[in-house]
Length: 146
Image 1: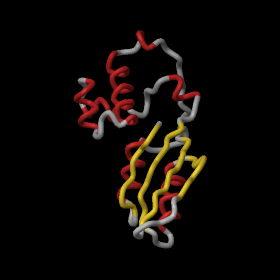
Image 2: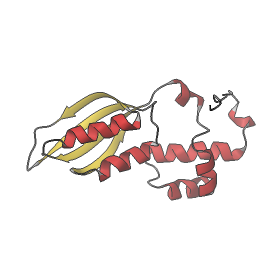
Image 3: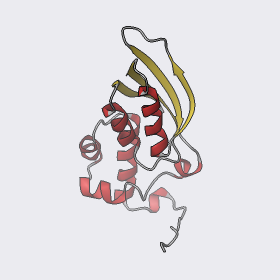
C-alpha cells in the first residue's frame, strides 16, 4: 500500500534554486518557448537529470488549484476512426475535452480544434502532443493557446 503524498505551501524564495529552475523549464515546454527538454534545461541552466528527478514533484501553487485550458489544433486525414483515435489519446492521458470543432474536410483532410482541461494529465503536455502528432492519420498537431 503506497503512502499518500504530503504537500506544503512554501514561499518560492525559500526553495532551493533547482526547484525554481525546474518549474521554469516546465513552463518553457508548456508554452512552446522550448520545443525539447534539452532546450528547456539549457535555457534554465540545469541538468536533464535534475529536471527529470523533480519535474513531477514541484509546480506552482496556482497550477495545483486550477485546471489549465489548452487549445489544440490538429490536421486529420478524412478517414473513419481517426478522430475517435485522437479523442481516445486525450482520454487515456487524463485530459478532459471541453469543446471540439471540426471543419468540413477539404482535399482529404480536416482541421480539428479542441479546448482541453489538463489538470488531470498523467503525462506532460509535451508528451501528449507528441503522442497525438505521431498517431496514425494525424498530419499535424500543435498547441495554439494555453
